[in-house]
Image: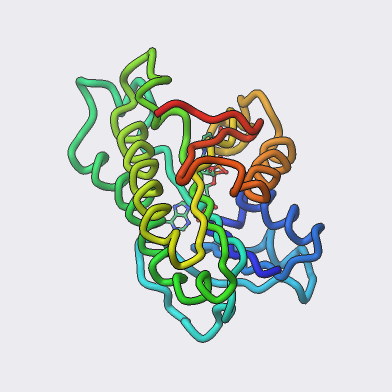
Length: 223
Ligand SMILES: NC(=O)c1ccc[n+]([C@@H]2O[C@H](COP(=O)([O-])OP(=O)(O)OC[C@H]3O[C@@H](n4cnc5c(N)ncnc54)[C@H](OP(=O)(O)O)[C@@H]3O)[C@@H](O)[C@H]2O)c1
């Protein structure tokens, strides 16, 4: 099994790397700058790839020819919720920056890897957030993060429809509230719990409606 993960050098992405290495997969782990946590894993099943998802892939030759699972995990939160993402303080630039990474990044990476995904009849998992669910939004604010993750949900649904006949399955994931740098380690669950749950959902992709939005515990998220 070949798996490629973006934003793989820390947090949920790094836990995905460990999960799939433990399952015996060949893993392509993408990072922007710092890859010390990945080199420390020291296994020939791991292939490192420098890929900022806002840029085209720099070294196409290093990609797998067939790809069973693509996890579009790379993401940013942007300015702090109250200070930077309130109605008073949100800026067009912050909205654009988050859209670029959290939505367009996943779309571009998927398009680049489409031939390899077709070769394996693979699965694409887009890591969004309940913060991008309109149905779940009861507290408002957080404009840039919410909008960029909602945009990823609908982009993911279109990908699910467009790629279905090519044998590629697409699912959108909510990791839960997870203890990582993004949450200042204030989450409810560990990266291991989150990723074990999401890996189970990915494995059962065919049991969900096309382009479903599913949390780490297997429950569908309304959007
Ligand atoms: N933690 C949660 O509770 C939670 C909840 C819902 C959704 N999520 C989503 O889960 C995903 C992982 O989050 P996390 O909690 O693990 O966050 P994190 O610890 O902040 O890690 C984010 C990862 O994304 C990478 N990244 C950021 N911008 C990138 C870019 N332009 N190109 C490539 N990689 C980039 C970071 O790389 P650098 O090290 O280079 O910055 C890092 O590896 C994100 O999409 C996040 O929105 C998290």
